[in-house]
Image (cartoon, helix red, strand yellow):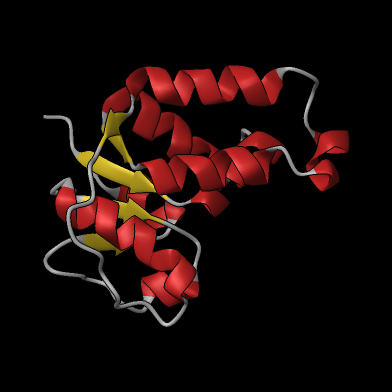
Length: 135
């Protein structure tokens, strides 16, 4: 059965910089085996971050656009009906919102502010390595 998963922007960035890294393999697993959940806010952040000039030397031209298309083609958009304010870094609350409103099974992140909340309302918050270990 496909699980519902929220992937943090930092994990996607790692995937683009090094597809064979642990975060890279975690994103590949999420794309192939599970269902990605996104919101307008998480997608906007992903688009902005991946297009930052500092990443351009490390990512082949056109790859960001094709990767974003791949994510969009499989992701399930989630509407956020009520804000959640639970994370030490308020910029990370958007991932909790997607997970809660989308009834996610897990959030995959390398962010300590999110990882410290594990579990959050019954939702696992996992590192990419922990996610890869789950069957």
